[in-house]
Length: 274
Image (cartoon, rainbow, N blue to C red; front, side, top):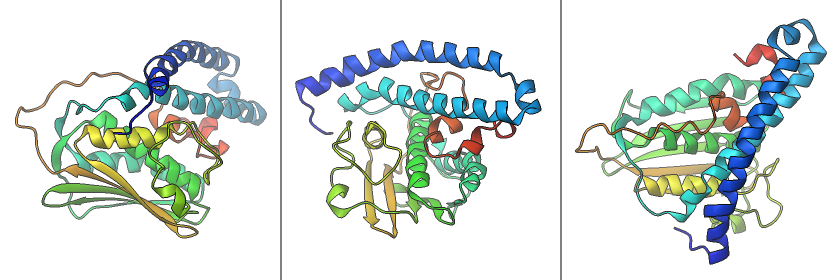
């Protein structure tokens, strides 16, 4: 785990989650008020209303994604393992990819899922692993131009199960590779646009460590990037445990929230919101 200064720890554990709590309720009220002003039937009737509402919806989901990351900021200061349950990592990753495939196609990017087995049970935290995969997919989509490909692969091994996300995008400069997981605030212009606060990859590393695993990145500028998560290939001896059930997206479409800053506006038109 990265070592944080006292000031950084206070920011992570107190200031950022407090900001998120204030914003979450206000943003939800704004969303429901906007839906009353531009209800589905009005969007169906008028293309301009639908376009305006889509701009709002995308901006809202992008902000809600930021709020979710701010709420999870305290996790970066922790080093304990998550509550894990025996679950199917192949089915989980396949399900996420199926939710994303049509949305990737709107950007002209092909999303592939690859695994040599149909199912594989390990001890994992499904909610956290979904967060990790969605985050890596969002980054991959932002980096990959139209006509490119993103591939998600699950490869069970003797000691570890490897989950990788590869893209044919712009790549990452070699001097940045060894520190892309370290900062929770960006320290300068990056290659991906639009830029966030830098919490996403730091949270991915925390999610990997919370499973007793690790995450690594390989990249070549102009060729693409591969993020590989290695998780212990073990099952829990205590059976299935109850998870917290916290809904960090507030009942909104998780796929749209997680990919909001990578998708084109078209994805938020009325016809695609169902």
